[in-house]
Image (tube, rainbow, N blue to C red):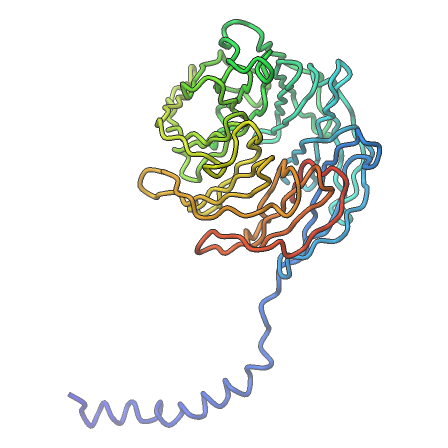
Length: 404
């Protein structure tokens, strides 16, 4: 009931409302507008074998417009096919590049990053402990680094010194040891073990290694302070000849997606760990539900699957195909992690070896190794779909991109 007392109490507020609205309208143009996101640095590793590209290149990316500046050379170094950057825990950052040459001289180079300009200053260079290093990861504390040597059939671990320099290898693990399994049936691609990635688990307690040569994923416990690894455990998708390449953890930490290079599929694993501090174990359980990355009518022999990534909200998975030259989007079911195809789109070039989402996840950058181009796509967060390319930037033989 609206009493006389209540009417008298609310009357001043009613009288003031028009004046308040007028004041708000008058002040609206003078209010501070949201500050747009600032441009960020992007480093590109390019293949130097052709004698055109010289090493690592730097661009600025504007997340508001999706525009990328022309890359400029910031470090001459051999075949920087994969890059990693340290966490910004001490006010400075360090960048690490594999030098993917196929001989015993293969190395890892570390750089100090100039936070103002993005310039790179070399710190040191150490042996990769095997030919053809193709992947490098840093643990979450920034104290240890791990490298996969594709042609050298090995992985190696390193301590990271306070200066950002890497020590010589702390451990070198030879995947030709029979305990890492038998070679796969593809005589050309699986002639020897081919460790293709070294990936840290979300809790920073385990290292997962995809071995393309034996169709296994090996799991090691790690000690970041010493860069030591525990004994390995091996897991398989039970499909010889698939060729595991890279993996992506779902944000929930319970699902692992492994992209297989040879048969162009993605496997879904369930991930569990023990809580033991003295003898921790990581376990992968294959769900037996692989999905193809290529269209049903595209020949498997003419394609090699490359990269895999998951959006931060965990709703979408992205993959790239070299041969079909496509980017593929899958929806991730929230209840069990199953994948459903959403979109297949041309990469806008040839041989999309790598791609990455920008920090805002409004854009996707794709590195097309054999068409000398970087293509930018707009991403819709609600549907997961990408559109474009909205821009194409020239760079000879781009192999990798890293936002910093």
